[in-house]
Amino acid sequence: MSAAFPPPPPRPERNADGRLEIVLDNERLIQDDAGQWVPPAPLGGSQPDPVGQGDRAPMPRPGYTPDGRFYHDGSRWLEVGRDIPPPPREEVTSPAKQPPLPEDPAPLTPAPDRTPSVRADQAPAADAPEWAVPPEPAPSTEPEADAVDQGMEVERASLWSRARSWWERGKTKEPGAPQLSPAARKEQRRQRSWRTLLASTVGVIFLSGALNVGAFVVSHVQSLVAPSHRVVSTQPGPPAAAFPEQAAKGFALRFALAYLSYDQDHPELRAAALAPYLGQSPASASANWNGRGKQQVLQAFPDSIQIQGARAVVMVDAYVSTGRWVYLAVPVVHDRGTLSLAGDPAIVAPPRVTPASPPASSADTAVDVPLSQQLKESVSNFFAAWASNDNNKLAYYSAPGAGASFPDLGGQVQFVSLDDLAVAQTTGSSRGAVAKVTWEDPVTHARFTQPYRLTLVYSADRWLVQRVDATAGGQSLPSKGGT
Image 1 (cartoon, rainbow, N blue to C red):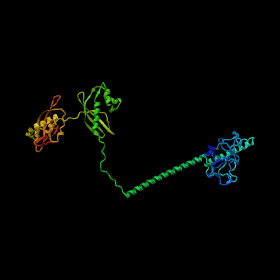
Image 2: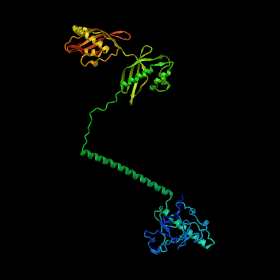
Image 3: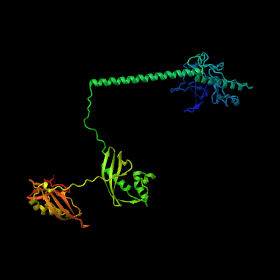
């Protein structure tokens, strides 16, 4: 592979003072008023001495400037076209036409030095050989033209030789060093790469080991100087997120309303209602329904829930338009704050109902008959005031501070009569009692007799109602109020 050809020498440029300036052999030269190329004058104004030898300073070599506008004959500069005729353009050899460099590893052959030395008493350096130059053009019949061509070729060869010397100087470490073949140079680079990689690996391993040892020593010293005291918390960690029971019941109830309502004439209504739970696929739209029949949920409520971790099964009781109850088990899963179906719902059996036990005889608890007859009128007035939401009468017959325990019945019933009142025969200022009250529905005029448990207290020389519980059915008479 041939070496790259060096760039041509620089061209003269005009500086800020309007003078031509050129850099040759790392030396800056300026053309003076006489046409001579001299080093720039210092700030003092005197002409500098380039080599420090006074009038023995070397003169520029004979030849043309790179732009061909000036020629130096060894003692002065001449302007081409005014002082001397221009050289024939076709006889000027361009640097781009220089012969290519020979292939490595063949050594380059120096050519005889045809350029004048820099100084008469100083020989060229041994490490700057002059390279072969192209053959000289054929001599012209005109003596002046021959002199111009010869000077131009000499100057061009000198500049080119110096450029080649600068280019090759970095490739030759020592004068006379043997040239290596491409294979030898490749092997040398490979060995150098392996040595570099090995040194880097060893350095990294050594540095890592040093850091580990240093960290161990520092931690050991710290433990000796100031031993740490670990505090183990005995407080329990934050509890796991509780399953959202109420939200799961509401989710299952809404799903059951959509799942148990269907119409064979409008199946798209059921599919739209189930889309938020099952998606938009055809299988999800049918939700295991064959597309026949018509049913509407009239009433539904969540009955019970069984929770296991993040999953639960909610029982929903639904009363449908066909006049029957349907019980649907809906599996629900809770994941990252959202609820979704954990599987397909299923129809299940209704909850088991235990038959009511026979009413206990009131003989189990002694009844204070005189007191029961005495308080029957006041307790009757209490129930009448409660049904009509008469707050004044309700406050008169109820114990102090117990008014909030008797919220408005909202006109659902009208008081008809107090059929029976049995007050327990006990001591103290608080007694229990059972009252049987007959109510009438103001819309249908139907009447129902229902038992209530009362708590009576003695205050301000009167027995007043303190509490009413609707849990007295089938139970014996309490011995004391509130029990």
